[in-house]
Image 1 (cartoon, one colour):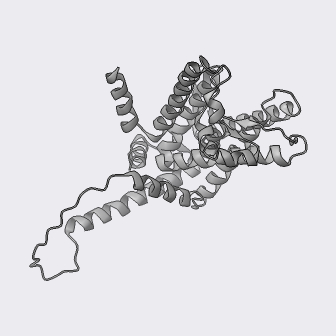
Image 2 (cartoon, one colour; image 1 turned 135 degrees about the horizontal axis):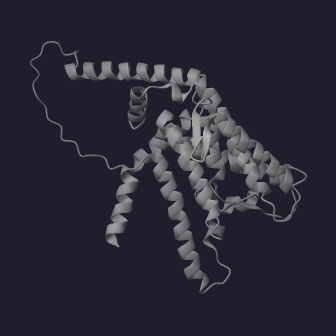
Image 3 (cartoon, rainbow, N blue to C red; image 1 turned 90 degrees about the vertical axis):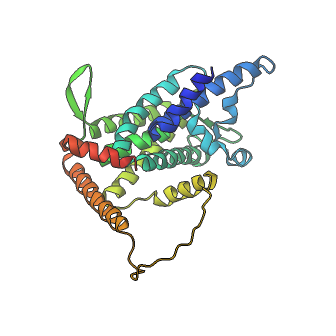
Length: 309
């Protein structure tokens, strides 16, 4: 058993950001299922997901503020389909996104896209006449909004990226697949409004995530990263939990008369850093004009390696 846990820990620590997100979602699902089964033996109507799902009522959310975050990593435990299809799309879109834009942007798009999905869900059930009902609290659970944000963002950023399905010989441009799924969400939203048991809130959240993904990618193509502030926030937050290495300071007499000149390896490092950034900019410009498929294998490998840094 310990070897299995160690293997999971190793895969998580060494894996990409996309793999980490998938593992967290699957882990929360398994824990929710096990805890619910155990507690239900003593309390019949208990479900852990009830404490992770985000409510539409603003007053209730003040009592459970953590749910704004936990809802986008939780899924219904009534079946595996809810989790399965979200993870399939996250694996597909997330890998393309990370290879192109990096893990840090992937994480920020996931979280901010998930929040945008919740926001449209909550606004709809509090202010739209067709949805708002007194003393009625709806709940939202699932990674759909966050995953949709990633899917739409990479589709808008790389519209000409060619996608092939193993059962269809014809390739499709990524933007057409994205447009199909967004249109499908609008159709499903329209057919669920006013239907008892319909997933109106879920489709609203999808559209909220799609709106953020579109806005994010559109601005990024113009050279503006609207989530830069959030990326800094995450960096600072992670920095609080990192162990600070103990530093031992040694004083050494410097006989070099030129005190202002840094070591030669610093010059080499900075020069190499500038050169790499110029290469990245040139590749991204090529992607925006001709699509990811136009890159050579060397360019794809270079971009993938840089995304890990």
